[in-house]
Amino acid sequence: MLLSPDDEILTKAEFVACVDNLRIDLLENPEQWENVTLESFLEALGAWVDGSDGWYRNHGKELPHNRDWTFFARALEAAAVYE
Image 1 (cartoon, rainbow, N blue to C red):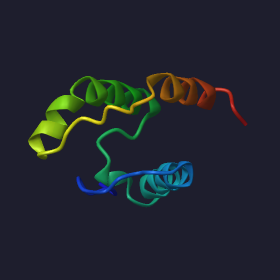
Image 2: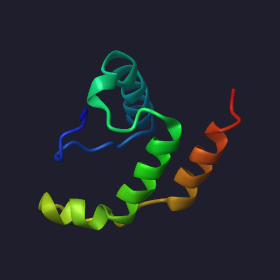
Image 3: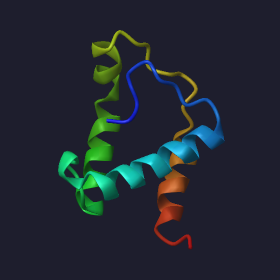
């Protein structure tokens, strides 16, 4: 959608910009999104993470070893109540 398979997010600022770009893209191009509700988006997010090893393999990439699952889980939970 917005990132190519070769793009990498290396900094917190780049991650924040990526999240903001997703929000803007949803507002400007909802017809291009399969998952426009929070419920369907979260369901797809979980499914993609579960199958992400296949995505990386299909794009000739190695699954990153430096993932911080706790950070992302906390970020998702915090977004439910953060103002």
